[in-house]
Each structure stands twice: as C-alpha cells, then as structure tokens.
Image (tube, rainbow, N blue to C red; front, side, top):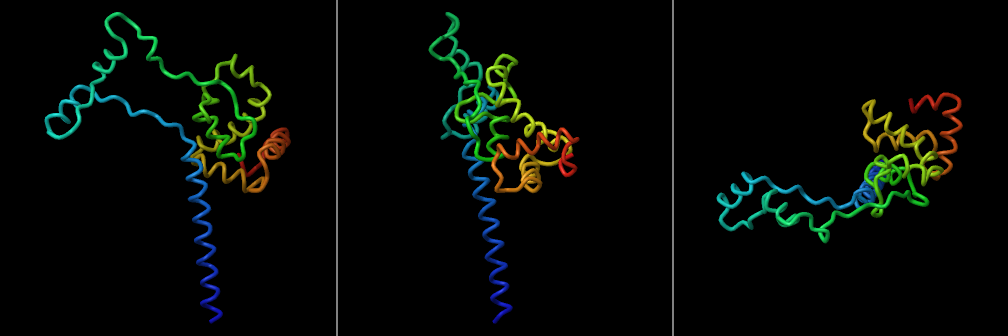
Amino acid sequence: LLQSHNSHDVHYATINQRLDRIERNVRRISMVPFRAAPLQQASSSAHHQEGNPGSVPCPTAREASDELHPASGHNPSQRLPTFQASLMPNPRDLYILWHEYEFGVGGRKAAKEFTSVERGRVKFKYCRRKIIWDCIHRMVRSGHTSDSAIDKIYEVYGRSTNVSTIIERMRVDNRAGGHPALK
C-alpha cells in the first residue's frame, strides 16, 4: 500500500511538471504576433486551380501586387502597419523579455530591430535588458535553445526571482567576469 501511494505521488508530481511546462509554452505561443502567410507564386497557384477543381484560387504575387499598387502608382490606403519602437514597462518573466527582443510584444517593434535613435529613446531600459538578451543570445549561439537558456538563467538566479533582480545580479556577476554556469 505504501509503495503504490509513493508511485502515485511520483506520477502526480510528473504530471504537474508537464502541465507547468505546457502552461508556460501556451503563454509564450499566445504572445507571438500573427504573421500573414506569403503569397504563392504563379506556378503553384495554377497547380492548385488545376489539381483541385473545388479549391479557391489564390492570387499570384503579381496579381496581389497589382491590387495593392495599381498602374497609377502607390495606393496610400493600403500601407503596411508600422510598429511602435518602445519597450514593455515591466516584463513578468525572462520568456516575455526574450520575446520582446526577438519579435516585439503588444504591437511593438522587436528590440533587436531598433535603430540607434530608437535605442536612444529607451536607453535606460534597453541597456539594462541587453545584459539578459546578450546572455541568451550567447547561449543560443553555443547550441542551447532560447527556452533552455532562459531555464539555465532561472536555475542560477532562482525561478521565483523577478526580472529586475535577475538583471541586477547579472550586472554584478558581469563585472566579475560573468557567472561560470552562464558562459
């Protein structure tokens, strides 16, 4: 009876860990901005129309371009959306912070695509966050995924530690050459 109770506890703990991981992944995925699929080329469009009689014809890149830019020139009512070059006021965790760097969050431009003028407008936030972005980027270049790099940072500084505290501790560690586990 005691052995089955222990195996039940182990099984319950494993399920909780997996559910936590799924919850974190769903939260990250839900923050990814929508990106429209690229337009199909003429050859693939013709293939879809001929191969599948019931399929809806897709416009070719040329046809779509003609719709957006008629012969008279540029159509100003059909402009691409512009993204605001700003940073979040207070990211809750490192996953969101990395997402802000890579893709942008909440209709904002990705921080890695900021120009020097845009970086200057948010200099204080950018410089503080750059410590974490550089660490994650360095670990990704050395073979980790971004998620495993972030998990490693949380292992070093504590999972319950907030982003500001992690940044402060990383600044102190970087002055001393960086934390050995994050090199």
